[in-house]
Image (cartoon, rainbow, N blue to C red; front, side, top):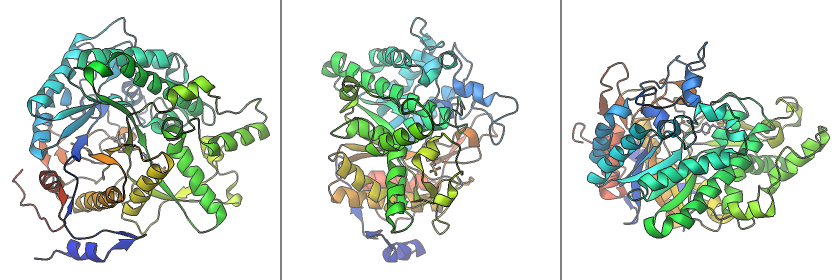
Length: 501
Ligand code: GBH
C-alpha cells in the first residue's frame, strides 16, 4: 500500500533539496545514537553526597520560574533506572549513547579537593553497562548544571572558571578515559552564555545582556580549549579518543532578497553559532568579523571606553583555534531574519539582540512542534551543513542533537516525518561531500525540558512522570528509528508493526 506520506515526499521539493522517496543508504561507517543530559533525566538531586547545581537552585525558586512549577528533583529517575536506559539504547540498536555528567555529583562544591565517590561510581556503572551491551559511551562533560558554589563566585563570567573547568575535566579523563573515547567538552555555549547570563531564559538567569554573555563566551572558549589541550598533552596517546564541542546552530535565512536582509541573516548566523564556531574552526580564529564590528561600533556610540566584546590576545586566539577533533552540531530549526530600522528601540540598549540588530521570526506555513521556537525546515539543515563545510574547510561533523517535541502520546507521526526529512537532507549533504559521521537523536527518553518543565516531550520513548516507577514506553518513532539504524538507511515506506521493539 502506498501511504499518503510517501506521496507527499515524492512531490515535496524545497530550495533545491528533494525529500525523495527512494531508499537511501548511509555509509557503512556512519553511526547513530541518542542523547540525554544529567539534570534533565537523573533526579537524585540531593542523594549520595551530590552538591547543588544552578538548576537545583533555579527550579526551587519561589515563585517558581518553571512553566508547570516542576523540578528535576526526580525527573526520569535515571539515577536509579540507568540500566533500563541502557536496555532502551540496546532495543533501539544505538551505536552510541550520549549522556552528560553532573559536575556537582562528582565535585559537590565544584572544586577538586572533595570528590564524591558515589558520583564517580554512578557514571562508572553507566559506562560499564553500556560497554557490556556494545554501545559506545559518548560523554558530555558540561550540559548546564554548574555547581552552585561556583556560581556564587560568578560562574562562567569569572575568568577563574577556566581553571575550575580544567580541574573537573582532568578527573573525568582520569576516571573514565580508559573506556570513554568520545568526549564533548561543553554543550551549547550560546545557551549557557546568552540565555543564562544575558537573559532569564536559563539558569543562572543573570539578565546582564550586552556585557555578561561576551565575558562568558571568552571564558568558555578558553575553558574548552584548555580541556582539549589537556587531552592532547596527557591522555591522547594512551587513550586515543576524540574531543569536540557541541554548538547549537539555528539556520537564519534572509526574509527577502534585499542586501539589508541578507546582511541581517549573516549577522544572525554569526551571533548565534559563528561566535563560538569561528574562533575554533576557522583558519583565522578569533571572534567573527561581524561580531567585532557591530559590538565595537555600538560600544563606542554608547559611551563605553572599550568594546563590550572582550579582546582575545594572539596567544589566546592560537590556543582556541583548531581545538576540536570534530564539530558537534546541535540543530533543530530555521528562522527568517530581516532588518527593520523602524524597530529601533525594540531591544534594550545595550544588549545582545541590539548588537545583532536583526529581527528573527518563524514562518507560519512551516510545520510547528509543541515548542514555540521549533519548526520543521529540512532545507535549513541542509544549508547549515553546506555553510559549515564552506566556512571551516569541511570539518568532521557529528550531529550531536536533533529532534522534535510533541505534547505527548505514543503515535508521533509528526516526529517520524521530522526525523525522516532531516535525515534525508543530511544524506544529500553527505553525498555532496559534507563530512558528517554521526547522527544523534534528541532525546532517548522524555525529560525535564528546562523552563518548560515536562510540558514538551522530545523522547523516542515516553516516560510516565505520574508513576513512581517512571515507566518507559517506545513511541512509534522509536520503531522507525530502530529500523533506520538496523538498515543504515531511510525507507520512507516502512511502517512499523507496533510492539516489536
Ligand atoms: C537543546 O537546546 C538542549 O541541548 C537540550 O538540553 C534541550 O532539551 C533540547 O535542545 C530541546 O530544547 O528561535 O532564534 O529564539 C536547544 C536550544 C533553544 C536553541 C531555542 C534554539 C531558539 C532560538 N534551542 N532556541 S530562536
